[in-house]
Structures are given as structure tokens and as C-alpha cells.
Length: 169
Image (cartoon, rainbow, N blue to C red):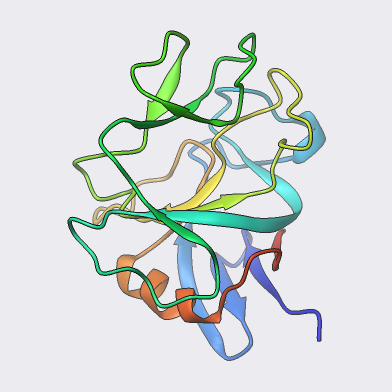
């Protein structure tokens, strides 16, 4: 059976089998993946796969999931500099090029699921750090990611595995 998580941006609902939850997405709406660019604050539409995830071990127990999960460390980052060789890749901090810090105080990255967006190979400027992560309590839009409330993320994790499809429509 080819199961996938579907994020329907028109309905604002994510679904997988009998699980459904509301989610947030890009502040500026959506864009076909091939038309998106770094910093546009739009969620790229398209089919993806789950790669692996991160979690804050100081705040949460290791998630129960078949998806490979890594504990976030204070020096973990993700490069978002299109002209850097590590663009759209995990990096150790400090890092000389522009990057996003994965260790965040606001809880958004307490759980981070890495999608296959622009990663094989990364095309400079096509967008980076498109994750599924925890939603802010005020439900603010993201800068392009997909965001689930922490309880919904916890309910989804046991259903996931590496390589599982993710459809953003």
C-alpha cells in the first residue's frame, strides 16, 4: 500500500488514513515547487518524501516512530545561503554562510520533519529548509514550511516512516 500524508492547503487539513489535523503554511500562500525561490515565504506545492526528523530531547522523549529521528543539539543548523556548497543541508554551527538555527526557544522546532524539497541535488535559490514542524500557539503562518500543533504532530509521528510520500496540494 502506497500511503502518503496529504497537506491540502485549500482546506487547511492534513490527512493520513483516519488521522486528520489542521495545519499552517506559508505567510504568502503557495507556489508550484519549480517556481518558488529562497525567501518568498510561500509553501511549495508538490509531491515529496519524508527523509528523517529532528526533535528536542531536552523537551520531549524520543518520538515513537519508524522515521529516523535525531536529537537536536545547540550547534545544529540548516544552510539557507544559495551560493554556499551546503545550501539546503544540515550544518554544524558556527557556520560562516547564512543558516537557520535548529535549536529554537519558541518550540517551533521541537519536532522537525525533513522533506525532499530541493535536495537531490539542491538548486541554488529554489528554496531551503522546507520542513513539517510544530505550529506556534498563535497559529501564525510560516515562512514556507508546514506546521502542525504539537499534539497533532505527536499523533502523526507513530504513523510515519522514511520515504513515505507527502503531497502538498
